[in-house]
Image 1 (cartoon, rainbow, N blue to C red):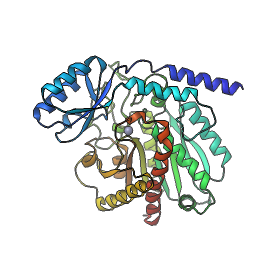
Image 2 (cartoon, rainbow, N blue to C red):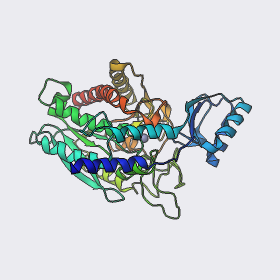
Image 3 (cartoon, helix red, strand yellow):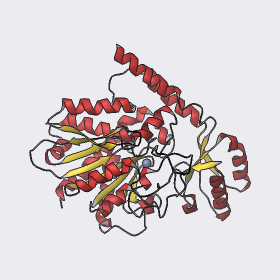
Image 4 (cartoon, helix red, strand yellow):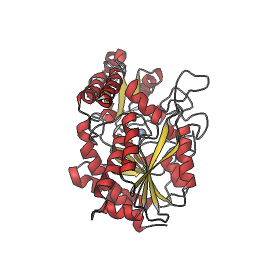
Length: 419
Ligand SMILES: [Zn+2]
């Protein structure tokens, strides 16, 4: 009774925050066709009237490639008029961002409270879930604390694999690097639940967990995740304070030591892609990097789960140069996205990060790859922009089910190609 009451209160508080920040903001999709268009988009980005919805360096934006911009409410009519004047056609993806956000919190507030893998969960719930699932499955799961966040929260890692008494090869998978990408932690939880559900059965996942361990971090950027529930649903970065700036946080996926802070990242602390004062400055990034370094002899694959874009990416993102096993990675990605598509027909594209997404330095997948982990992938889950970071809960189950097929495919391949 008391627990339920308390949970209800926490959710009510979480739901009531995030107030009005995005009232009237729209998301527009457009494709620049000439230099005038590009110049206009750069100008509005630099003035803060609009920003790339999927943040990257505006200076790297080119023509002939569709881009989504979040346009601040105050500037919507000006910008629409301007776009029409210069002949830049656009499509409105989201009419009012605040309404999408509030709908999501409304559903969360009103639902019942059994642990439901088809729902989004706040940090308190996820934290106690990690304890419970480890305690209930001692032969399969153990929980480790690999470090603390900037604000002092534990960063948990679940080791998922049958206990054999000897070291096993492992696949490392992290979720929740970017705070607002809620489908990502939902997937890590789903994955662990599936490992439990299929344990001891004749399933592909069970064969894998008999031979290998999965090292799963359900939420890397814990502080950011909490903030996305309580203050700003669309927060992306960590919550560390910056020297000489009122702007908070670093982009954890620009903070790894992979050509740190060169292309596709920013030295401005107010930017969504701020690389931080130095590589691994963020405690969360340092904790992940230290853990991987200390276990690099057993980690055979690195998977990092993000949203949104429906892409399976592999190194490199910091350069257009190809990875040494580019062919193998491309084949693997192609088969993984085919497996994913087989369930609900969801189309994913694949390729190196720089060619398929955008140039970006300091990413965890490139860093892990350069450390010697030759199977390194970033998944950008659903969707392609209709809801973006605000993917409805009704899509959690199908998204997780189809993604399991891709992860199983990669894991089976890695198990058959140990090195
Ligand atoms: Zn992300």
